[in-house]
Length: 169
Ligand code: ATP
Ligand code: MG
Image (cartoon, rainbow, N blue to C red; front, side, top):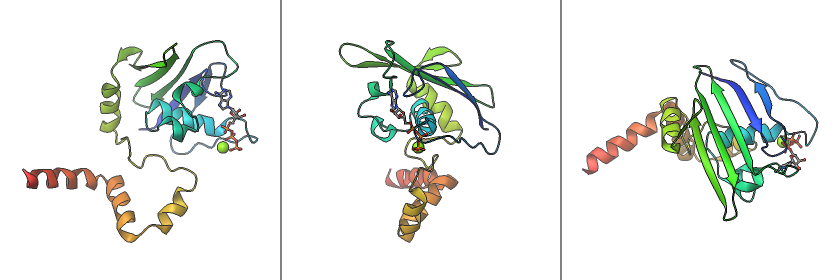
């Protein structure tokens, strides 16, 4: 399975609704400094709920809303090759913000989205996204730490956890 399309609306530097196609295998995004390449990655992390606002290079979630707009919402939708679309929207309110999740344009709980993603190996704290500097960090890790990451990618960690749980019971 792969990401087919990303739709960004009023999120960070994307003031207007922007649709970005992705291809099976390999997609490269290029552009001048400050043109929004990393913001595209931030949008993906946001809709997958894989990152705190801090890792999205924003102090708080509402900072993700485009600064030059008078709208109080930002949203990102991601369509996978199986035809499923997940969407996350944040709305600024007087007290803070609301967050909404949708699957195939139906409002749903975040847990429903995360269950779908987990079925495809996308889990919070998992190694789904290799960020800038990660390769250096992995090279400099101890053998034990590196093994833990590999176990997680291979899907072994989940079974180790279940085994430990069963043994403890
Ligand atoms: P580089 O090549 O330097 O890594 P980049 O293409 O990755 O650049 P980004 O970091 O994605 O660039 O984009 C940075 C731009 O996004 C900055 O100009 C910043 O002002 C803008 N930006 C970030 N958050 C918002 C926001 N909430 N509203 C409007 N613009 C924003
Ligand atoms: Mg960048």
